Length: 197
Length: 215
View 1 (tube, helix red, strand yellow):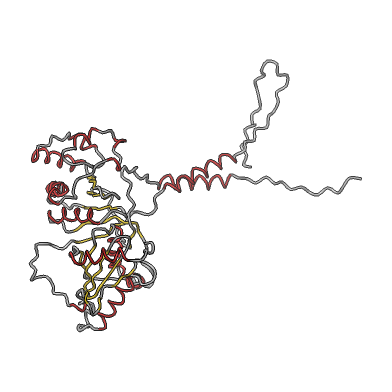
View 2 (tube, helix red, strand yellow):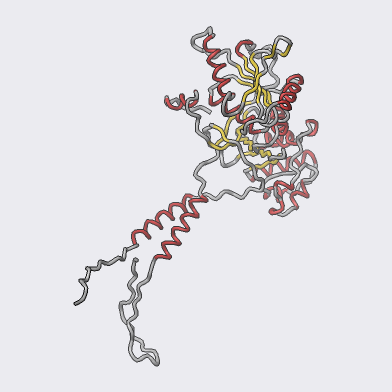
């Protein structure tokens, strides 16, 4: 081990009863000091915050804007995403059609197979293929996000995150309508147990 | 005849170098450690791909806990004083201004403010506090707080942060957004944990091609 040699100088004093000044070995073992050093390092490693929490920007639309000024979204480019309880998520394209001929109200999941990200990417590719303006092929893509009363904050943030991940430029966070809310709650109750988020 | 004696080599290793390295590492970590202030309100934030770092000074933070309770933190002490005085003047609440200045966060209605401030710091734990009432749209006190804050920050830029818990339900978030909209606050930042853009997505392709991430 490392040594600290402090035996230099010798003993000058002779205590009573000591006949001969004995030269004692004063080699200090530094192993415990190294142990303490590493213990302190481990403590500080665990308490250092290396990653700062990041912030996601959200811009709310101005409520006072005249309805006529709002961009009229083309029905073919609109994708509406509805979030229900228990991490259930549903979507439909264009206007909601629930009638005898069939409905376009479908369900998806946050992660895993048939994820909402796949749905968004497919819709984006769809809009791009039907684009009329080559300089801005995603002009018609608008995603409307309607969270229900039962969904969680994490659901909303995840969907807003998907907007960033898929680089969707036009999206809106709006209140859910009464019919849609009933439809969502009915689907929630009858849905199979969801996969975890 | 004695056995052939093997030449013995010393097995003592000099540990001085190891000791030096250990203390160098230790000094590094001591200097770079920033202790997080113990939060009275425990909130688990969701993760997102947002890259912008949350501001750490002179911000206004609205916290939504998992039960949907809302708390307000104003970082700058002078702004706290301005807010308290302005509330006392306009609503005649009689808030104890020095105690308000010292309080880490605000978690009660206007009526219960003085009893909240009278509690010692350790007793102000998130679970037991009522939070700022904002569920009822007719009595959304957060709107008043935002209005007072807008006046306090008039002329300057207010960094408005929102920290919500993963399992907080949407109505609490909606009432907070209503409070912001009523005061014409359009932009705010939501605190999240960082995560990388998922491989293969458009955002990931953008970052690979070196485009600057705007967010």
